[in-house]
Structures are given as C-alpha cells and as structure tokens.
Length: 388
Image (cartoon, rainbow, N blue to C red; front, side, top):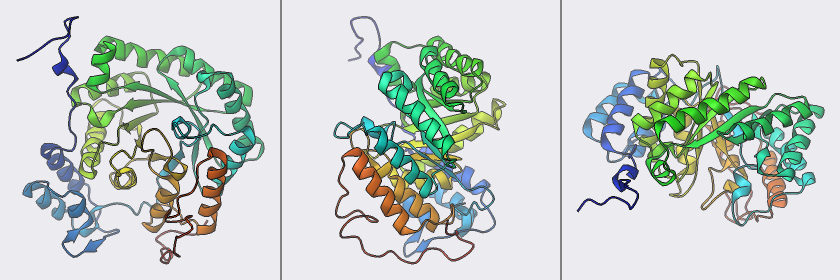
C-alpha cells in the first residue's frame, strides 16, 4: 500500500538514485572508452585489468566499451596538469565525534606539514560556526601568507549569504583570496525531510554565489550526497551553479556509498551536463567518505576519471567511518604518476603532526606510519613521478 505522511508528502520522493547501477556503469564505461588516451599507465593482473576488477558485475557491453580503449585507458599519468589535493582535516576531519579540535599551535604545525607533503589547497574551516572557528581561520590564512606556504585557501559555508560573508571577513582580515565552498544537500531524502523544492535550491545557490561575488571571492558549489542524487536533481543544481558563475563544482560521496563505476558514471554525467549548460570551464572536485571502506579507491578512481581536485583528511579522520585518507592518497597518486612522489619520511611526519593535533593515535597497521609498517616498494622511476 502506498502511504503519504501526515502533511501530505510522499515518502517515495525520498528514494535514493543508485549511480552504481548497471545502466550508469554502461554509460560511464562507454564515455571513458571514448576519451581513452593512446597510451599511459596500465595495471594488468591475472583475471583482467584494473578497470575490469573495479567494474565487477557490470554488463558485457561495458567490458566491450572498456576494452575498446586498450590497456592505457585509465589516465592516471597527467603530467601536463597533475590533479590537486585539498586537505579537509581542519574542516570535515574535526567533525568526527572522537576528534579533538586542535589548538592554534597544532593547527599551524599541521598546515606546515601539509605544505611539506605537497598538499595544494587547505580548507580553513567553517568560519560561521562560531568565534573560535572564525579567529582560527584568520590566523591560519595569515600564517600561510606570512610563511609563504604554497597552499591555496578555501573555507566552508552553507549556501546562506551570512555564512559566505563570514568567509569574506576572514579574507579581508588576512588579506588573502579564499575560495568559498558553499554546500547544500542534493539528495531526495534531504529534500523530503527539509521540505525543499526546486525554487529553494536555486534561490539558495544564487544567494550564496552573489555574496561571494560581492566580496570578490571565487565560488564553488558543493553538492552534498551527490552519489545518491538522481540526474534531474543534480541538473537543477548544476544549472544554478553555472548561471551564478561558479568556478568549481564539488561532487560529494557524503555517505561513502559509491563504487568505482558509480564514480565514473557520475563524473561522466557531470562533465557532459556542464558542457551542455555552457560551463565546460567549471572544474570538478571529488569529496568522499569511507563508510563502505571504499574512500581511497573511490578517490583514485575519481582522479582516473578526470576530477581536477580531490579531497581527503589526515589519517582518514571524519564523521562516522571517516574520509578518504590523505597521506595514502598522496602516496598512491605519486606511485601512479599523477603527482610528484613524496618521500616516506615526510608522510610519516605529516601523520605524526596530525596525530598530535587531533588526539588520534596512528593505528599500528597504518601502511605508512604504523609501528608495523614495512618499507614500501620503490617509488616510480623518473617520468612516473618526481621527488619533491
């Protein structure tokens, strides 16, 4: 029997869309095969290539499309433009219930450690969350500037003008440019619970983007829970972002739901829709969580599928099961030739700084910094990544 809620809303409207499904896998495989490079990294193993292992269970048509691109279809080797890494430790990471909000001294130490392992972008936090969050964001922005750390700056906000204006205050006080990462729920269940309609979504994105533009700050729309959102809902948000002049769009796997071929399907869809909306120049971010233990693999797959920037946290900390693990992401991207390789001692130092700052122990079995870790295999030879 079909039921509606007491206020007349239909719970069926909250049903999640599954980007991991077979139709999405077929479309993604075909799209990636179409743009496969003529050469590049190929990881083969008994029983099939990396694509076949990751796309396990997809229909035979998907395999045919993948094979059509030959072995080098996964473009990890992006020498002309390495993928960027954004460190979310001091924003999303400290939202974990067992994580300590670091002292300012520990935050400064961790930001320097980020620069030491080649992190490109740091999220300064959510300034509108309260006075301490605002003051710490100002301090860190000034530290990056005064120490000439090679880190671009972002800060989080809801798609609310008042939140964006707090980011603008940080930028003004620090004398630095900060990209506004304004987030809004995109999944049907969030819209059902909140009672949000299309008009509300468009109005919220426009309001936040206008506030960023008024302050002269670049704007990124963060689509929360994008991996459980149907194409028509995402299309509304994408159009609002393009119309508002967004420089970036961030696709979030907020519940750690997506599998590798779901990543491919969603990124292929986003690229296609942005181009159709006149937003081909809008850059794509990937932000993933680890609820199914797939955070790192999903992040790597996002890179292979063309994400311009990928997010992660130190030691994989964050809400519930945490986020994609940043030091493992950077290490693997270096080995795959997508970024300069980072010496292990720097990664270990970063983990140690994060552990001190967050009050979070390094697991003994951590692949890089754990007490039981063994020396890794040799880093890639020249041409597949260079030491920092």
